[in-house]
Amino acid sequence: TSGYTMVLEKGLGLNATRDLMDTAADYIDSLKSTFGTAAFLDYRLLRQKIEIIRSADVDVYPGGTFLEAAVAQGVYDKYLERCRQLGFSAIEVSDGTIEMPLELRKEVITKALDKGFKVISEVGKKDPKEDISLAEKQELIKLDLSLGAFKVIVEAREASKGVGIYDLSGAVKESEVDAIVAGVDDVNDLIWEAALKNQQLFLIKKFGPNVNIGNVPLEDILALEALRCGLRGDTLKAAVAKF
Image (cartoon, rainbow, N blue to C red; front, side, top):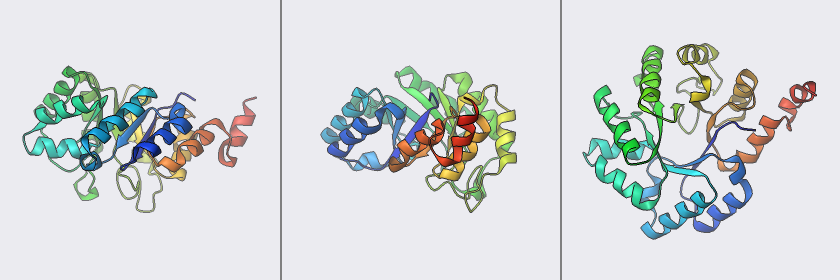
């Protein structure tokens, strides 16, 4: 399938990274070293790891929380330079924890693009009590895409429960999905964070097998591809009906 798949990792070593690329690179579009985990790997090891991922034609980037920390500390330019030196191919721009005024958001996205990075932005807050309105999400999605963002992630955190389009049990709030989609020109511009199978299944049934899905756990990459292709019981009937 051609649906975009973004996978989370939290500190794989070199051997595990090679194994992952040998096994599943064909089904991964981007690999996110989530939150600030990349900061705790030896510089040379991290460069080697990124080289392994890039040689498999998979984009790799640090989590948006790392960028937020750099912006909050006034060292964003240095952050971009270090990401360039390490070989990261993309940058996630988010404000899930900090406040980022629109003008600053524009500057952050533009600087990353000017440095040659693919920009994947994110809308929504990590704390549901601080989450922005659907109208604000629609506005940010349009802004980011107009500035040149490759795609925009709809925030749901690693757990995919109680945040964004999911309730506390992880069930999808379809009305919120519909409201977000109503404000964009092309649903393919969005990546839906969906770590759980029921969420992935909902999105595939609603938007088709090529829907863009993010925050996929390492152990579920091939399982998700099977779900997309109708090679699991949940989607087999629909796939067979097309033949």
